[in-house]
Amino acid sequence: MTLPKKSRPQSEAAFEKAMDLMPGGVNSPARAFGAVGGTPIFIERAEGAHLFDVDGNKYLDYIGSWGPMILGHRHPTVIAALEEALSKGTSYGAPTEAESELAERIIDAVASVEMVRLVSSGTEATMSAVRLARGYTGRDVIIKFAGNYHGHVDSLLVAAGSSAATLGTPNSPGVTVGTTRDTLVLEYNDVSGLEKAFATHGDKIAGVILEPVVGNMGVVVPTQEFVTALNRLTKAHGALLICDEVMSGFRVAFGGAQQLLGLEPDLTTLGKIVGGGLPVGAYGGREEVMKHILPAGKVFQAGTLSGNPLATAAGCATLKILKEQPLYDRLEQLASRLELGLHCAAAEANIPHTIARVGSMMTLFFHGNAITSWEQASLCDTERYAQFFWGMMDRGVYLPCSQYEALFVSSAHTEDDIDRTIAASEEVLNVG
Ligand SMILES: NCC(=O)CCC(=O)O
Image (tube, rainbow, N blue to C red; front, top):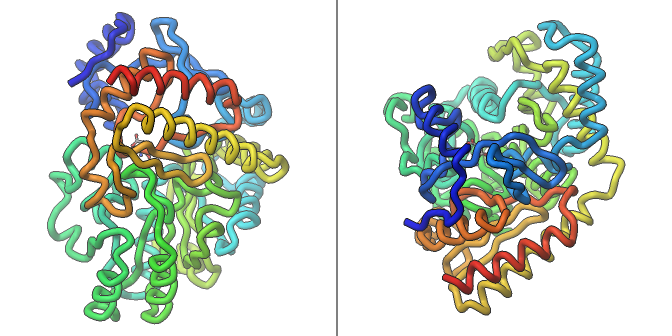
């Protein structure tokens, strides 16, 4: 296992203390650097495209809080909206007009969403969407795909991606066989597997949930045949298509991955960017389906902090900027520059690799072939990734601490930042 050359004594001390207080020293396993070894850096503050750790080191941040910070950290408009909301109160547990504004902004952007419910995390959004799909159809079975991650919902924590895959727990202890009896796991991009599942269980399938651009086994893109089959088979069998756009929503396009790919979901789950850096999730879809949620209908779902005024303010400010400013072209330019630079660096060093990218989310896989499923993703050279990760960290570039997580470019990155990142990668990949 490669470890960093640089020591970070304050982070090491903070981690040692945290390990006594919280399991593994963290509040979410993705943060623990488990797959790359060593000590996670403890963050002191962030600004624009940069993170600053407690040892006083500055890093170019390509995680962006695992996706939400598409505008970079402390965007002045988002901070101003938060300050204004804060001056009025922090939680009411009663309706506000700002909730309608955020709902309206989501409905305006995502073509398939006619009505939306706000929650507090992506996990809550997917959990609720699955319940609604079952409640609406009166059926039990949910199809999910290996390596896709839908938060830590029990019934979906099977062959899960993200830190569950990275840390070797794709099927978590504590998730009962009974809970997952109605979860059918297929390989991503496997059209014939999907056809067979519908041929065998068609009248029992409540829905199919997927990441339309996967970010949780590294970036994996669906084939056009897979997209067409998902649209066709769900419609033909009366099952709901659920696009989990917690990561890809407002990230790969203003209308999400569904807009880019031509997916026609009945339900969409959102999180991350819609909260502008505060805890928000959302699920939405056709009005006729959404009206089955209590109190309009009978499917139960609730939340004390749902539509929280601070989170709603940050979300509205972020979505307003994304609507009014042509940031997606800029993100595309920056990210394609990074893709090309990383590709050239790895090619020059003769390192087998493939890069998957959609807009500003991307993965440099240490494997020579294109990655289209978890079966293939699992063959990557994760030891090489760990070396790459620490080499980049020591040069002030903060990348995901796992081969199986996407990196994100934000609109706060500059061409110069990208070029510095490429120069660092050239050094790291050539040193080996
Ligand atoms: N792929 C990682 C995430 O999406 C969330 C971060 C976390 O699990 O802490």
